[in-house]
Amino acid sequence: MKFLLLSLVLLLPYVYADSIEVRVDEEKVVAGESFNLYVTVSISGDDEPNINFDPIGAEVIRKIESGVTSRMSYINGRVTRTKELNYTYELMPQKTGPVKIKNITAEVGGQTLKHKDIRLTALRTAPKSKDFFALAIPSKTEVFKGEAIVLRYYLYKRVRVANFDIKKYPKLKGFLKRFVQESSREERVNYKGQIYIRSILYTQLLFPESTGELKIDPIRLTVHYSVISRNDPFGGFGLGLGLGKVRSKSVSSDPITIKVNPVPAGSVPPHFSGLVGKHSFKFEINKNKFLVNEPLEAKLIVEGPGELENFEAPKLFSHPSLEEFEISGDLKINQDLTAIKSFDYTYLTRGALKQDAREFPISYFDPETMSFSTVILTIPPIEVEGSVSAAPLKNKAKQEKILEPNQLNENKKEEHKIEDIGVVSPLFAYSSMGSNWLRKLNFLLLGLIFFLVFIPILLSLKQRKINYEYEEYWLQIQKQGLSYSNLFQLLSSLKKGTEQDIYQVIENSKLSEKEANYFSSTLKKLEESQFKTKQKVDLKVNKTYFNSLFKLIRNESIR
Image (cartoon, rainbow, N blue to C red; front, side, top):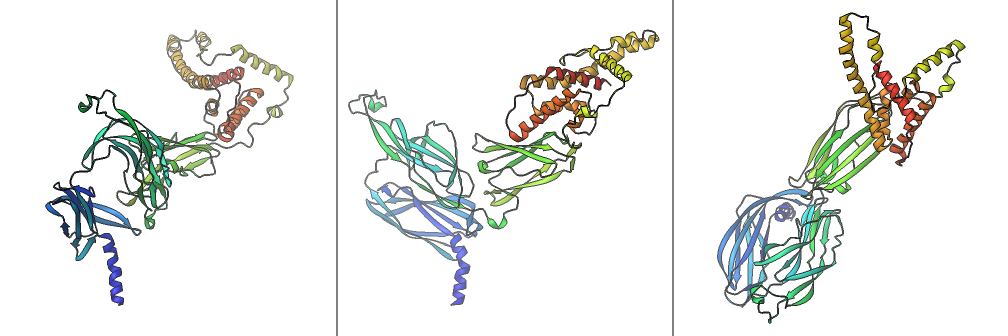
């Protein structure tokens, strides 16, 4: 007895994996007209099945081998590879009345697969086909959790339809729904031996959010169609002149069951993203070297057929010197119904950092190969230079020394010299070469040629480069207003290779106390607005202070 039970247990997987399916196009056939009987045998081995059945009330005309296909199935938590052998038998009813196909078996691998009897009715004439109907067609009826299903609802028609009204849309509970806008153009199709014109009513891309069986509920609509009047002399030629009557009828599609399997739990990698289907991943970063308090901006782009709506941005950076402020995501749908989701990362560098290049793995499940695939992202090296000041700005007044009277006079002379230069607009270059070549008139001819020709050219090129840099930021400020990025870059022109914090650079510059306080407080407000409060601040541009800053940048750069 124990041996018998053990044998049955060992045979169970093979009995479950091998199966036979039999179907016909219609349950009602016509006497004297052939119909097809479709037999599909699924086996796990390489043996050829021997198919037998007894047709009662019909005779077999011929046998057609439709082909062999291989597929992978998910059974009892395991992946099983099976081979499907398809056969088509053409039968013809001998007379009207019941038709029965019984004793349907397939002998393969030492076992006998059985199928229930098929019962049909042979009619004297073919039944009238429907004039129109609604039909739901999913791309798949067995999927994994999170795998995409393209669901289309069609209207099939054989008569002239004036218009239709959709009265009830499907709820599609248990699915994440992505609406798809498709063209409703008409096309000719063959449905169960009849020619119809069909058009798309409604399309959704579905992602099952739970395992088990989920229902595709019907769509319900009212169709307004024309019935050609017998009094229309042109109706028989397809040239109806509107003499027919318009009638209305409500139709709905049949419900469909979708089987949802979980992904294989035994081989899930620790870095599984939850995405099902083949996806691509791309990482970008604005640059590799930064100064303290400078924004680090990165982007991750994910593209594929999976449920990207619920895919969250992975944590790519984790370091005390990188302060995370915002991660924003954007989803775009492609024409082939795949999607692209991009994540914009924004960090603020708060301290010195040197991080080597590293790898970041992300995995997805591929239902075609029934396996997990891993994509390796390369995070480039990152280096942050500089130090953080204890306070944004110290009071310059407390650090100023008391000057002696003679020193005060010298200081006034220096201020007078600076004021004589004048305030120059940052949008135009200036040249101070006139006094240089006049003082060199007594030099030798070679020296005179050098100063007249080569020195002005070199200084002009240098001056153009200086002007271009800060003028570019000034134009951005005039067009777009003040922002943390353009003001930070403008003030960074004062650094000249120093590793000081930007606030220390402002403090130690030759700006006046009021000017330094203005730029320091403005930069601090913009930083809080962009990275903390997320609220836009309206700050006025003090052109006098900016002219002083431009003059200082030019003088420092020329030196």
